Length: 131
Image 1 (cartoon, rainbow, N blue to C red):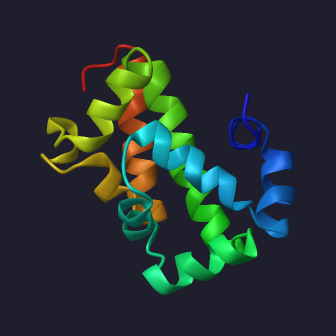
Image 2: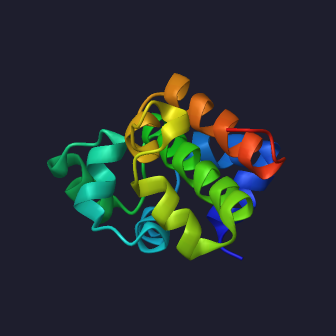
């Protein structure tokens, strides 16, 4: 289990880790899980390329950046549960979804309000509510 997985499932630990700043490795894990280049992940997290380069050198993210990483990781784990594991989650998060007005979940989740919409849809799918 990675630190990011623990953080996503433990609100107290999440708060402490976000305030301390997530380590670079956590973004690397998330990019690997989503099978996307770190540059695409940075775009989704709204972190400029130059800032990502600095964060890699520093080894740690700022509070707001850490919060966005945790937000996307939370959706990753929810999708894994709702649609049957990593391959399904990866596909689901990167394809347009009828329940999101044919928008792509990782794009919708750029803002907290969008992430909540994606989360709501994943919960409906997980619990078998017509989505």
